[in-house]
Amino acid sequence: RVTATRLLDLKAREAETRRKQMAERQTMEREEAEKAFEHEKEQQGELWDTRIQEYEAGVLERMERLKVAHEAQLAEFHETQETQRPRRPQYSKELLNQRKITECLAKLEEYEKAEKLKVVTDQMERAEMQATQATFDANVALRLQRLMLKQKNEADGLQQKATQGRRELDLSRQQDIKRREQRFKNVLSELANLQKLEQVQLREQGSSEALLAKEVARAIVRVHILRLHSATRGTNKPL
Image 1 (cartoon, rainbow, N blue to C red):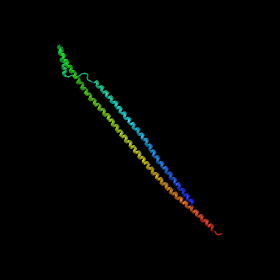
Image 2: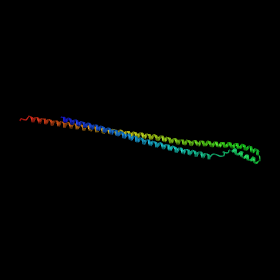
Image 3: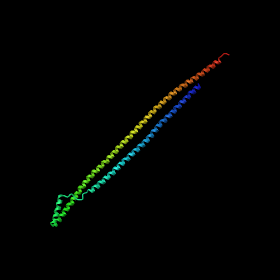
Image 4: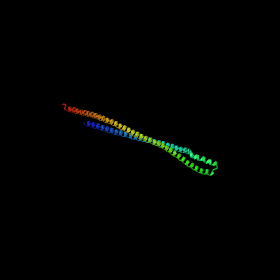
């Protein structure tokens, strides 16, 4: 009986040892899975940060190129307008007639009248030159306004495109994070199922071994009983 009890105790200790070892190993498996997930999460975070930085650098580069192009367009515009600036007025018929009259008076040696009329025509020419310049400047201002509006629309369009790209990039990042988190949850769920199955198998194995130990213990007890019976019969034999 003492031997049977020791055998049962030994089996129980072995089963408890296997259970603890399994529990420790399963805990390590979960911790390793979590560490792997955190490591992957950190790496992917760095990759996404780099991708976003590269995107922003690309946006700045495109904005700078557009700015340089716009400055060149403005410089060319002002240079072109300056070369096209009128150097003389759009002579009116009245001014041309006054010029002819002045010439006729000079030919007729009406110098005093011609001089007085020349003063008037010179004033008319200056006024018409100012009007011509004002009209030209007004047209230049209108064309410049159109050009600057066109450039503003181009810059706004590039900004809107960059904003849309940021939104798409952020959406892709969030979707990637969700996919990885879901995959990690699936891994943990599968690992938990495997560990539960392993625990069931260990319990079943423990039950089988406990049953076997009990049978062995019973057998040992029976052997001891038989030996006792044999010894008793031996002592009861007649001399």
